[in-house]
Image 1 (cartoon, rainbow, N blue to C red):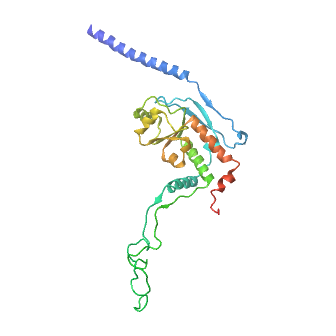
Image 2 (cartoon, helix red, strand yellow; image 1 turned 30 degrees about the vertical axis):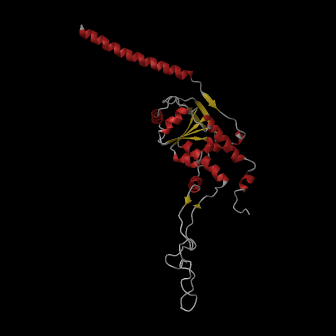
Length: 286
């Protein structure tokens, strides 16, 4: 009798697990069916003059760890599908590294050395060379004639279109390497940083991730969650640069941020007053 009861209990537990799995699968199917796919397409002015096809990317979600395709988005090839130029990337990286570098190495010249006010020996009568101070660079321990002076800045301005082409090249490389992803929003349901770590592991993002949105005040949950993760950063769209994009492994753009970047770069590429714009950066100005 006890054996019969045990078999019934085992079968009931097995069937209950199957029923729960079936109910979960049905709920997931219902949730997937409720998602309305979003097709984000823009008709550009030069659609009939494009030699390269528009790029298409999926729009992902951030409210669940598992990836859900919310829709499809097209991107302009002049921004996300240009010919990659490694030399342009190097110029931008070197420019961004050098304009914040200040050399504080300093040596004293003859005027800054202590002492040496009097003439070391008479001008004539002793057969020695003429000298006026022991702080002269000719003496041991004297001042340095052409040594480094601080603070010395290494700032220089990179040409305008080199900066624009650097942005387009970095975005193209990220998209080609499958390291650029579009999300509908960066709002997450919790403040716990383990949620982001699980999301990165599930979707193979990272280890370093850069989130870009149009607003400089980010949602509260993702701000608190990323504070504890040192290799995850948030950035507004107006601060996007080549150095930050290449520094992070994965670039996450919101849909509105991608459209804002596209709009701004296309305007800078095709602006009619570019000659007036680059004139102030010329080196031969009086």
